Image (cartoon, rainbow, N blue to C red):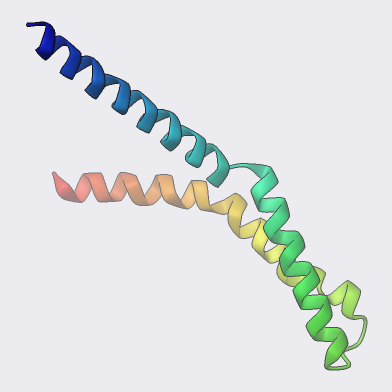
Length: 92
């Protein structure tokens, strides 16, 4: 009986560790910090590319893809909710 209890306790502990990891990863995926870092990287890369090809106002024009990324990230939760609702409805 003790052996079974130890096995169940071990499994429960592993599940709790996994849940904590999944929660942390989900928090990272939805964090404003992550979105900001990616937008900054997009801005820098776009500015460098525009500057290197001789584009006009590369530092200003590089805002376009960065802002586009931020807007798309803000709209994804709404689109995701709609998609999930349709998916569940079609599975019934």
